Length: 146
Image: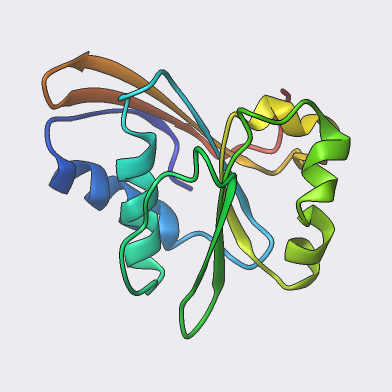
């Protein structure tokens, strides 16, 4: 399992790290992305999507909340829950439907989903270190708590 802290200095290095995580993902997995604006969450998500075979451009769903991306092999769902207020709101945007469809999730602001986030979620925390440099902490353990 990919665990630990990693320092990256470019988009390419961020995508390489995302590609390594993507190798471990399976339908129903949840990747929780935490960090300030500009810390690298969307760049990492773009790398995940590319590694999963998602065609086209992946952008932040800040205003639309959810973006679905279908690859030949998997449904990739990118959620930005910042504008939501709790589990009921997350359920209202189709959480259960996406789970039933075997989606792989990338979720920004995962604390808004509360107990809907499984304990097996992959937690990725981003720290902006200046310019292109980021510290990315990855925890893929079975003890996630928001």
